[in-house]
Image (tube, rainbow, N blue to C red):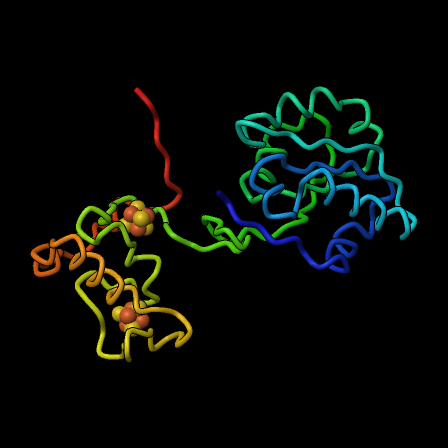
Length: 216
Ligand code: SF4
Ligand code: SF4
């Protein structure tokens, strides 16, 4: 899931200072779960904008499989409302925002309503945690399925630094040291042999940006 955070309303308002009539576009998937671009969130922004004297021409909240894939269809369905607007405010991740720009036929300005934070998973209490940084060269097989690239602030590949203290990370003492977690997990699995194998430096050519994958 792509984790987003809605921008402060005063920042959104600043983006929209030259726009009178606005179309809102949310996201029925990740941004709904993050409470940044679901139907309720879009309605709240609509009300807040109207209080500030803006006209909201309409809104849509594309869903499955992903706003990025559905956006073309949704833009076509809402063509009239979009064409009657000065601009579109997108309450979705950076991918969704750019998809709107790329698929928009009408010459309308597109504004950013959310900050995109990371790829994450949700726990039972509703908190989001970053678990994978999409490094393109996965090492989870040998780390007990705990990602050291993401969960260790130094992205160390071969065990803990000298700073870990009683299992806590020296960079953030509230967090467990990723490498102590990995050690404990491998020990539990009786796979400490994996801990002793030296990993070569990561092949960063696999994550040169912008990345692209073409299916053959
Ligand atoms: S090593 Fe970590 S960052 Fe890289 S692909 Fe695997 S889980 Fe993602
Ligand atoms: S204490 Fe552990 S998690 Fe923190 S930087 Fe060092 S190795 Fe990484």
